[in-house]
Image 1: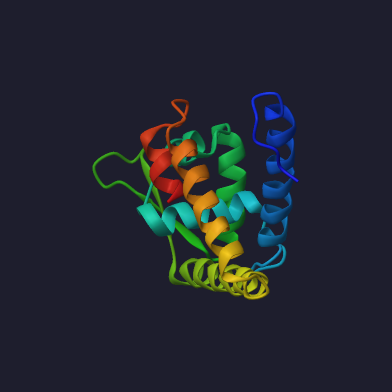
Image 2: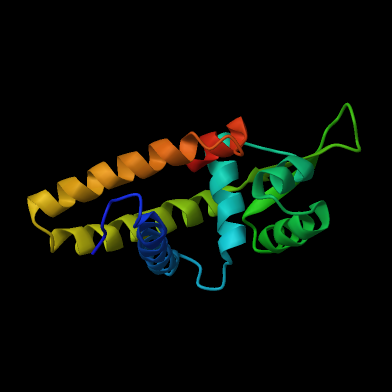
Length: 158
């Protein structure tokens, strides 16, 4: 049970963190490609939402090094989920874009996650669902106010 007082703040934070972590873990299990990592899916979802990016922009967005992002991109490219295209004006610049197959993975994974969550929510009464909707609004509002997030990271979270 969550107790909202200043004294209970550390305990409340711990309980909320644990609940969000467990929810997140269960949601991540609902994926269209079983062997795809969370990092790979995040890259596909980002490219699907915001369009082509350079390797360095993707690495910055995910908070990882360019060599790590290159490994992620290589794996997705081998699976046919994204492509690399050289900039005709600057051959050093390579644009990374999602393919139709990659879009299908994002769409199917999102559908599976929505269906799973809908099944969970179906067992709740209207008051509990309303409380969860309100909690989700509050969490998103506060996360978006976090000054450590870049504008691009905030947009990608939507």
